[in-house]
Length: 434
Ligand code: HAM
Image (cartoon, rainbow, N blue to C red; front, side, top):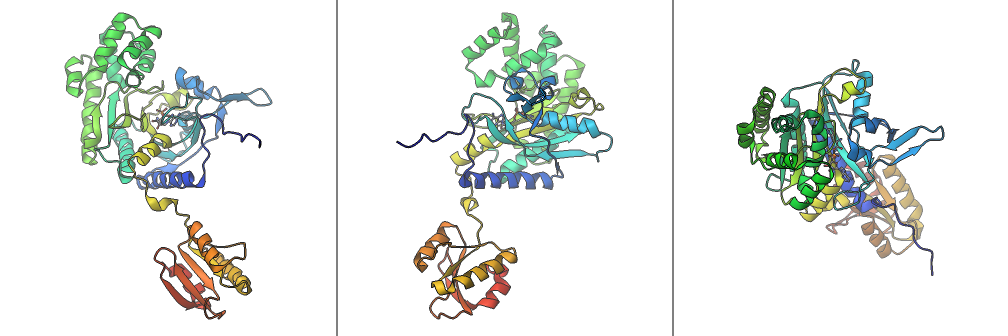
């Protein structure tokens, strides 16, 4: 019996080249879309002081931290999200940063969650954030970036929806139901579980979390509001009326951006993290079999809380895990992304030409063109097989038929078309060959 093969840690993935090619396609598209919408890239350390994630992210995420002590006894944690880092970075340099602050990042994150469909213990998350604007246009812009990306990869409004709500409105409805603001953060965390549990499970959970029967009934009345009009008819406070106007304005902006058909009002979207203050949103696939594809919203006080100036902020995070699951399920991953990107595979028809094959490979690489060769001296047929396995677009065969050093054969491995060409001429125009 051989030794037992060690397994990767619970909830993590090994990024074999096939998975990596898919991720690379997603990351490149995330990055291109970000840049096209005027965002600039930033990043922070993958671990932070533990305290950073305890200030205002809420109990749930704090309970999912991977944390450790360094040798000097400092308490550190691997980042479960990047928003606190962004807030810390902006707070530190708020006055010298060029405005508007439109930042994006693609951090690798870790949460000690119970692994389940769409949720792992290590994942990547695209972040888009606008800092310094309290206008609802900034919220609309972030939503637009998310939707623009999703539709670009084929996830149109018949497949996904943008579920929007406002914590300000829900807070005022809770106050109207005689639930005082000091309870709201706790109640938001409970409401966040509504769609993830069955009705009975939710009631149980709410009771366990200390909600009275009256509070539960008030919360459920809010959670089952059908649309913005239903909210309008209930809303009493001035603040809440103004926030409703913002939701209408948001819709107008989404309309102008051409993405209004993704919008739905959803009272149960309150978000699990504690720092959100106003408009919040999540993106789901309509079958709702999967967890949220993305989530975000306004967090107007976080930067001040981290010692910076009073700067409103809004943004979202979109993970790679649910996205990949959905794309696989709908067969929307382009077939050619797993191709290696190798252009030429140089083959010697006879081993006397091997040094020439190496020379050609080296000339191609020197010109910045991808090229590889078989390290074993094998038959032409075997080398052609290796060329195909390596995913090369063309095989370059040295010394075939004529045994002439100055003549090579270019074989297109997709169409099998062949042509002969002088070696020097080939090297000179290798980058033009398509
Ligand atoms: P979040 O809702 O915790 O928000 O995460 C956002 C997205 O990250 C989720 O919708 C999901 O796609 C992905 N995600 C979260 N946890 C996991 C997991 N365990 N496995 C796989 N994917 C996961 C935030 O993190 C906020 N910081 C987002 C934000 C940025 N808000 C404002 N700016």
